[in-house]
Image (cartoon, rainbow, N blue to C red; front, side):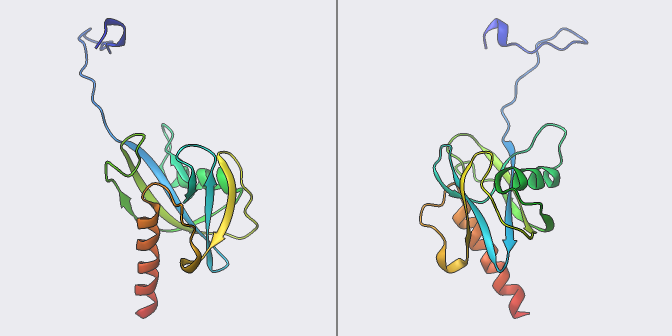
Length: 152
């Protein structure tokens, strides 16, 4: 670590050890008229994705999910439940992220905004082929959970 990158404790003046930790993110599966909303990314990696992004400092994961959903799809959502947490270090080639994935409902017409190039409505049977990150696995888990809840 170079001299100018050192983190110094303001109380004791000692150099603090720097830890490299995963970055928290959120994804939000938005249910709309028996379909789900996906965005087409305008940034690398290109392709279709579940709306989502990074959690801001001093922001809860719930607030981050709702913010990201509105920023990318122009939809105000209501959280329904937590689908799961996805933490495979290889889920995002750019850096190690841990994503908290929510399912939400909404009404209205989605409109691409922020870093979304396009927005689309999909069912399990017509998902796009170029889904990025581990979002195909997340969607598979979501649809499997839907099937299980319909059986009971």
